[in-house]
Amino acid sequence: MKTTILLLLTGLSLLAQDASRMTFFITSAGSGDGANLGGLAGADAHCQRLAAAAGAGSKTWRAYLSASAADGKPAVNARDRIGKGPWFNAKGEQVAANVDDLHSDSNKLGKQTSLTEKGAVVNGRGDTPNQHDILTGSKADGTAFPDGHTCNNWTSNGEGSAEVGHHDRQGGGPAPTSWNSSHPSRGCSQPNLVATGGNGYFYCFATN
Figure (cartoon, rainbow, N blue to C red):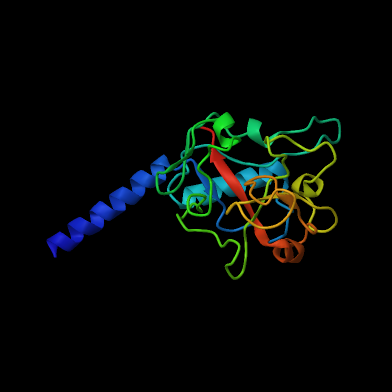
């Protein structure tokens, strides 16, 4: 009995250590309202809630999303929102050392490493359903497009489209192996995101 309790406590301790080290994840759930995330602020809050539920709420979390210039406000680049790195997944594996590494061919992002905050693998190409489209609104270098690609800066669940990346680094589109800029979504509604091959998930990074 004592041995069982000790093993259980050890396992919980290891989980806590991994949670304390985690600085990157894919959301295990989207907004449920397509690409309407409540803007960047709403997306950040979603990251923060999921991280807190996983035991990593003491960090400041930001969504990896770009936004277009609008209403007199300049464009926002996803790469400028996420801190300096390094970043680790829920299993404590380093996926990128810094911003430049993250946006290079040497990053360690992929289906087995781009995990949710719970440490789960997200469905990719060949799985049912395929959910490898991850919302980013970004070009491959992590900067914003000059002409949208953000579903009205993450407030639309209808018209428009959003740039997505493939977390499993495979599939179709102009850049199928890109984790952050593979192709635009079919639309901004939840059904359209699902039909394109996603589920409204996005990346979250800790800035500290």
